[in-house]
Length: 138
Image (cartoon, rainbow, N blue to C red; front, side, top):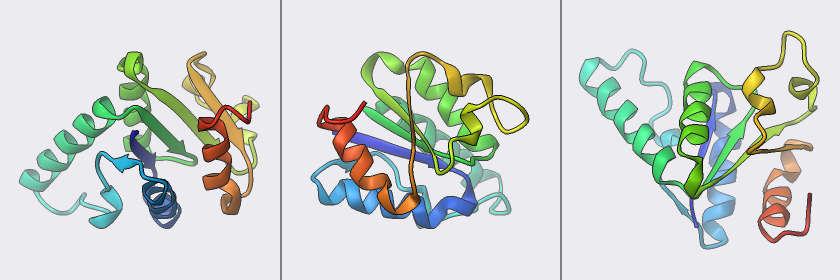
């Protein structure tokens, strides 16, 4: 299965761990932004290339995993995933689940009916996603 992991820069290590875990199960990452990290100061050419690569990666993925908290790029990728949802599953992860409760930590799109929301410690995220994909977790 082709997958993409969206998250904020502060979750870079966790995103890389999820990418490595799913790749180890035989899945194919459509784009690994953790390799280059923050490109905001890299100039117009790099910014354009990364934005095109990430857009293509989200749209081509069969699974998009969103790790919260995320930044503006993460939320753009979530929007792209919802808009191109006919070919994919979308899983949103929160360590505490507070983002799903409403209030200042939430985003209305976390409540879109096509999303699958999970909450668990970061150390368990790979296994939880694996169980979801196997249909053994709801």
